[in-house]
Length: 118
Image (cartoon, rainbow, N blue to C red; front, side):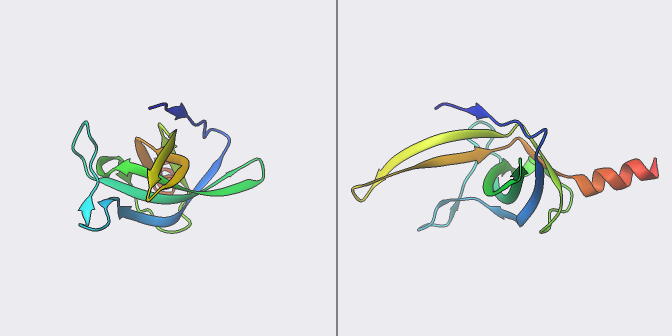
């Protein structure tokens, strides 16, 4: 599957919805896990603002990559953000889109307060 790195260096990113466990199967309630590490995956909805355009992105991130308090409006850094195009067929209907995955979502509020204290 093709992975496209996303440059976040000139974007403003903030939490739109706090992290929630990513569900792999809605019928059974099975929680999604990382295929390589087995870590529980979480979804964080972020507002991604670049060049005057704002988008809400749902970003999957392993539980170990979530740091700081991620409440609505918290500015965050997205480490290792990638986009993956996807396509599937369900009940005879073809669907497609782009999914997003990051290595980490880090609160910038915590970082700023630590640097002031130093």
